[in-house]
Length: 428
Image (tube, rainbow, N blue to C red; front, side, top):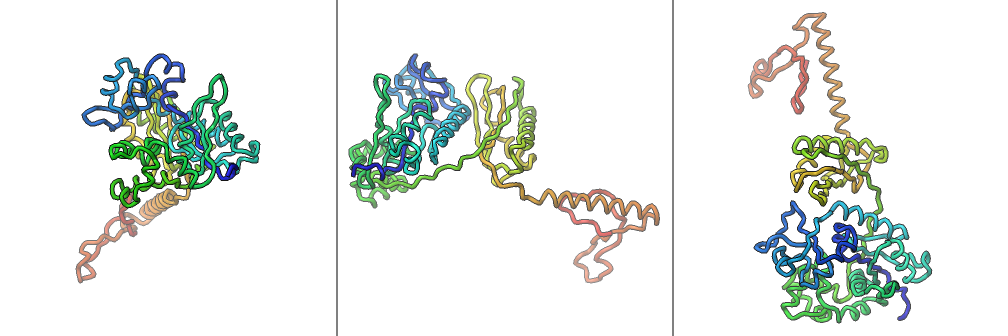
């Protein structure tokens, strides 16, 4: 079947995306081998090997340095290795811009991680020349940066095709690798490819080394194994890898394009403790006061900071319930500031996902109770002024379990003070 009508998934792969953003482009990476330094403040370590490096440049790969390698081993293999401070806030901003540009061509994008996203192409053919090549050209023009793009009947097949795409020579655009057909075509295309491609999926990233130790080198060999044996050895990740190797995959779940709001505040170099909490409170108040919020609650926010020593820090917080109460937001966000790895000169708060409009009626009930108590105290005061101190009394339980009614309760002067939250109202 030579038509591209069955090819519906396009994969966009931006190699070394996080390293490029942290380094500021390709030029610094051409000066020598480089790798993304372990992110400060994270608990991920390599056991006895220490912390793990992130993405690495092509020059570092030539020395045998790989992503996820212990930093000590990486420096032993390449003593000239330059460690680039991570920039999670910059990566999030740059990735959001890239996704917005892909959505600008009409694509319903399903992002997997920074630098990797997929989208359905079938509904875009009429907008871009009637063929999938036109959709891919439109995506490449929208990104405005080198990207590997491939297509296939499934998400994993499209990812494998994108990873095999090589840059064009002589200033020419790289020719995208396309796989046409259905499940059988995807299985035939994947059969000769190495099992290392499973490391590109988050759910199966740990499987390639184990499969290679067992002598399984290609996806075709994995697909030929009995499904029960794979499930017994590797569990749910193994079943997913077996399905991927046989040309099956989960359907895409495009994200819902949303709007982002953010507020930033510059800090003095010595800001810490209560000063940081006060700055965070100001950001929360400013964000809730933004007119663009339109009365909606906040479901997910990100706290980020530009560090004095270089690099950034970012923490994503998803509330258990959508909030618009500044007090509860501060209580949820303030403990995150403890994870700051170094002093920061800029603190930023970004809304990542909005919730429904405010429907919580509890503040209204508390306000009504406060108004009712204030009116009751004023009425008691006026009554005592006119009729004396014994004009207003309250009932106090003395012996609730007594069989004698006269012993169960007694009359006492009405307490003219606000009642504590959770206490029973006084009975005049």
